[in-house]
Image (tube, rainbow, N blue to C red; front, side):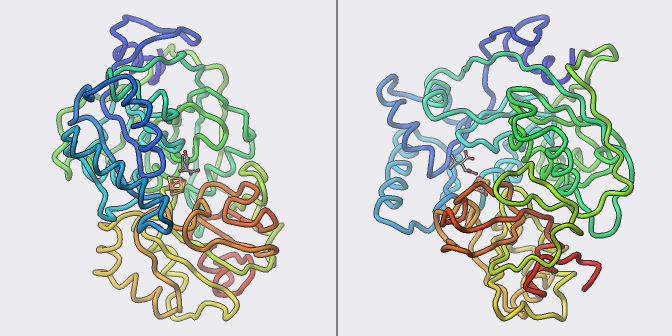
Length: 415
Ligand SMILES: CC(C)[C@H](C(=O)O)[C@@H](O)C(=O)O
Ligand code: SF4
């Protein structure tokens, strides 16, 4: 069996599972946020009185915090009341940050566990060797009631990534290249199992950027064997008691892909699909009005630092707004302590509170017709950040910084 099959077999008390099997799995951690908790709670209250295990549920406010409408404030009240009534101890509802940064950072993610969340980017935790995936609110309500859910065991694609990344090229560029190759629907309901020396050498933040975007080619999950940096991250959070799942030598994959990233240059996903990816040379010079640095994809300290290193000593172009939203309060604190925030502020960036911010066009940085944004987030769908006549380009943090300075899509090597 490969990694996902082994984890799913264990979670469903089976010796072996194969792609296509329908199983019932025990869930280790279940999560919902301010956007998806209210519909989950509504269904839950029709089927049960008490959650299966309050300790295993995590509730986060991140999508629209602070509330911007009476409706979103009402949504938050529903979640607060539910959390109190069900005595859920893990409530991150005071601006701790985006759920996909908060869960690992606060020690809720362990290798070889099964984690579900009512958010499509729940696949992020695969960077820690967990099987994690997004569920709809109705399915999650069943998990809150019973601690179990069903899966069809996915087919797996083995993604080998080897080589050393050039300057100004990061894991965001690698995952955009992979999505371009596979296509936006190329891995629908399949598991992406990442291997290779590039992945083994990556920081935790870089690995999280990659598993975070597995859903952008339709994948059920993305998964990696924990490396040295991942084990250190876990032990810093007091997590030492876990098992590491590796694939058997004769594990089966539907297909194997090999990526050599030695010559990769920064990649840009152009409007309006994440697989519409070009080398930066092809789109350099495109005018931008807004630049966004943050999100569950690229809002970690390392990302802010990369941007600050490009920006140091420069001002943002007078026609551009650069919006920075750290992925979490911890990231924000570290960026203050190390001067990264000061560098960004001095360049005239707008620093927003930790959370999803402008990523999904619900809250801040909403764009009107004909506006163009370059962003470190993970989606550039039509209307994602506002008007259906606005445009979103996706890139790594250094490219966002360089573009904010020049007012057009720019390779950081030109700054
Ligand atoms: C609002 C939420 C359900 C949604 C998701 O599931 O991904 C959001 O986080 C997104 O990134 O589009
Ligand atoms: S930061 Fe963006 S992609 Fe991530 S959970 Fe929030 S809205 Fe979704």
